[in-house]
Length: 156
Image (cartoon, rainbow, N blue to C red; front, side):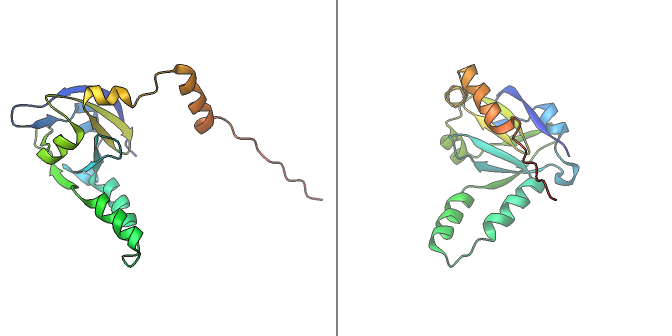
């Protein structure tokens, strides 16, 4: 399994293309080829998924019961604006204008690898969503990654 990681400062070219950092591009699953899916994030950013990772999410959301109004509402909002993009030989892809407006990306972007996906941020907005207090970050790490107590079951 390839992991997408790291934080990179990037610039959009005059045609609105972003070059995917080489370390991110090198870790895209071979099965995805140069095909990736770009979506709107839940925060004001864009999220890029390798095609193989997107298929897992797509199947979950598409599999929701279409006769349930709440599910339809979620599906409609989740799938709107998703687009498949292809990386060219230089690792570039065009950011659609509607998505650029949504994430308020102008000439610069921060690209962040998050394991199975990549987030693309306006640099100023990105700072607003980072944990600034290291003690708070430490507490989050303990909460999500710390040892959990184990229960010993004694049978006689």
